[in-house]
Length: 61
Image 1 (tube, rainbow, N blue to C red):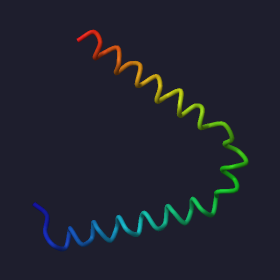
Image 2 (image 1 turned 180 degrees about the vertical axis):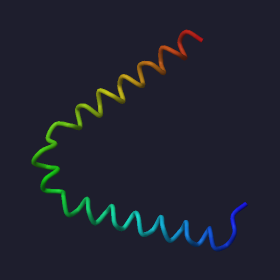
Image 3 (image 1 turned 90 degrees about the horizontal axis):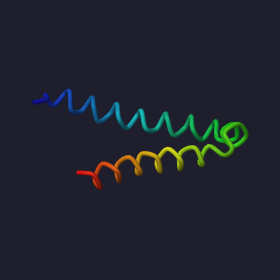
């Protein structure tokens, strides 16, 4: 399906991408803590809403 060159490129690209994103996240961590306080509650509410929709779907199947 993929040639060896494509697989090697994909693996190296993924590794480089993860390293760069991790480095940038660590660099901006103080700004995240300052400007994005309380966003965990938005994530919890969103996941709860999605879970509620899934539960309703399976209840009424």
